[in-house]
Structure formats: C-alpha cells, structure tokens
Image 1: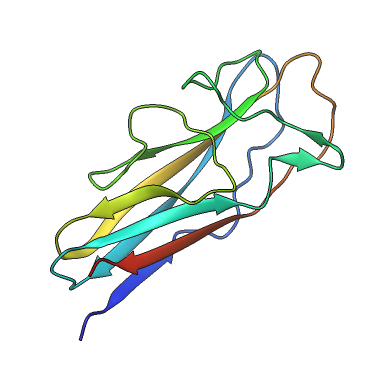
Image 2: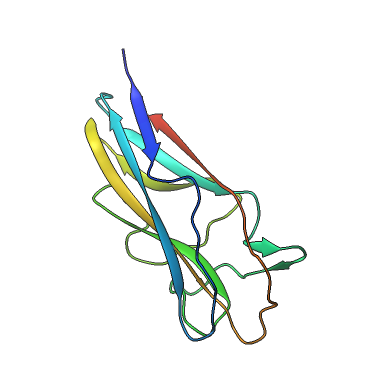
Length: 138
C-alpha cells in the first residue's frame, strides 16, 4: 500500500508591519514522507492576491521581491524545493513547490513568503489563503 504524509510547521504566517524600507518575510516548513517508488509532488494555490478589501499587493514579476517596490512572492529552500532560485508569484493555478522522484522520509522544504511595499501602497491589513496539496506519484 502506498502512503503519503505531509505536515506544515504552522498554519498562519505573519509578515508584520510592512515598510518601503525593507522586505518583510515569514516562513513555514512542509515535511513529507512517502513510500511511493516514484516519490511525490506538493502544489500551492492561492484564493486571490494578498489583499485588504479592494486593495492588493502586486505579485512579484521580476524574480526578486525588492524593498521600495510593491511586490509579494515565495521562494523555497531544501533539496525538494521547486522554487529555490527566484522569488515566485503565487497564483490561482496550482504550482509545484516541492517534489521528489523517489521515496522520502521526513523530507523538509521551507517556504519563505516575502512582501514589500512602495510609498503608494494603501495602508491596511493584507491577507490571503494558500492551499497545499501533496500527492504520491504513481
């Protein structure tokens, strides 16, 4: 019988108070175990942009969240990370954030969420929800 287990280190991330002078970040870790001979894949999908009412923070478009620019994205780290090299926009289409082509035991991938604002960004409490799905490869 093939099994897959995935856990998150926390269920909510706080980026704190955003400032045009610095990039804010927060992270969580996904831990996956599976005995599937062909490994697993974990995807992420959002319910909409990071937002406060009708205002939102732009998705990162240039591969790097930069202080002073209104941008939001995620970068992964770990051997299974699929976004290890650049800050990447989270979208409404599922994207791979972690994957392996072999069985794994407690393999960890860290996701660092990054946000920056400009002087024109409207003040507010910004949030959104992301959903992770982990499946064994068959």
